[in-house]
Image (cartoon, rainbow, N blue to C red; front, side, top):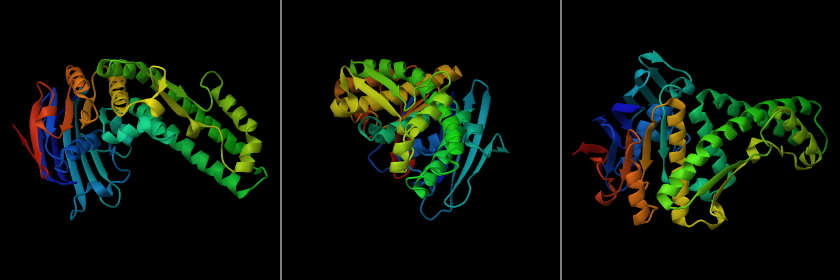
Length: 358
């Protein structure tokens, strides 16, 4: 899979940028706050209709403009896909794929795929469990876009069940069992999808970490309710077993919102004992593992985007990572200076939202 060309207008600090996208590794080079990350973010938005950096679209629109525009064409094994997006500061965005309107993200994400690392991914390793749950959800919705509905349905059912528990302090709401069924049904779907995603990503992330860091990263999914046969029924049993505590604490105590992703280097839990460099490499290699899983799922490599991937690594690990980027298809890398440009990469100089290929 390859992005052939990219047009960006009024996106963050890019007033107007048009680029022909070469195959292989491309490095966007420039000091901080010049627009390197914004360029990768725009490309990622074209593939996913979402930003990995912010939860709303308003910050993406350049100050003084009412909309940002991103256009590009992706060459895939199934043919070329033209994607055109109007990102509005307020109101619904407009998306077209091959000149036809698209209303659901999954209709695009099933045809074009990308994986992106950003420095904020360090929180997957060092942050709270919610950060790792977000990674799990991003992983399975990247691999199987149609399954994003399971997560949304679970979150809706969970909110309703928690509302009932808060409204009936100390007593069981009369319709709680009905919401047990909804939480169990959608929770089982999320648990199953997360488990399958970790099965596909975990060993690949471990291999990537071994290449970059020389050690083994172990990745294990620890769900609130163990996956397996009759998962939905075991979900109901878990809710029933915690009923007294739930009525006392007025919140749901079993389900995907209490899952964890265990990460360890050697015998040490990564969150508590890993060095900064190991944590950085771990977060990076989880994204590389996802890219590898996407490649296996699609039978072609996704477009890989890496924002400042070398800054948290020592010189040896930087060299290993640079060498490991070869043969991954199209890779877009943002780096602050020439010393971090991977060998053989084409170079773009970025300054003040303007991009100049060498």
